[in-house]
Length: 245
Image (cartoon, rainbow, N blue to C red; front, side, top):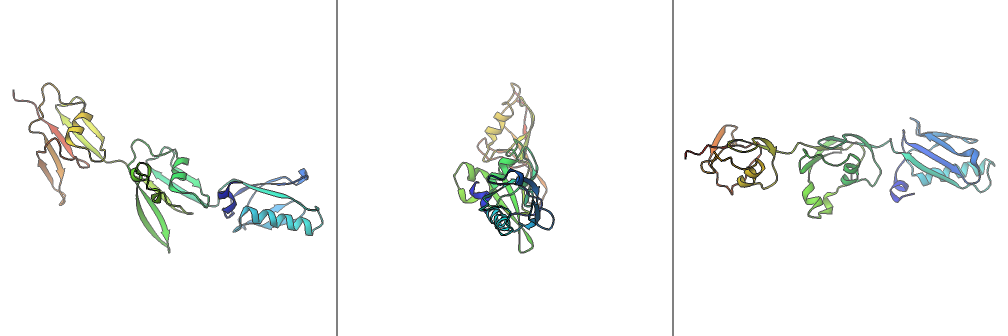
């Protein structure tokens, strides 16, 4: 049994597989009921919720011994499906949904179950964690986690947490480019790099006088003439003019 399974606290909905050495008639696959108990052959109801798998198998062994049903019972209990504690993964992941949670689960563990972040997903995800009855929103930079080796960002998650992966920021490019349209905005992307994503300037186009239409801090649209090394911002609209020559 892996360490995480040993530490996991059983709860209602968990599916268990229980065996007793040299007692095949006592093999049981069962679900922890809403009261936190299971019904085991010979001994009846056994309350297991709130304790570990090890504690539950010891309790069953003790009841079998004290009841005189089995001499020196050796009980093994395995959690085959974790259902009592779940975390929700929403947004731009390959398999959004609810996933079972072990005590030692981290962001990386849950994202792996959800198939990872989709190509349209942002580099920054949001962990919504309940603390003292209030929702706490934590932004996690996945590039720093996976590429810069900042293991401290791989936070432990708890029952009821929500992982939300927003859509990646985009920019728009039109005019005299080979592939006009909307594209994912990579971190630190320059105007020159944005032009390359758009397939480059057409034979009729020019790099001179490129315009960017951008929302200012007051929400109003402004037009700027950037240099090729300037950074592109989320939702920028880049216009490549036709050459006058």
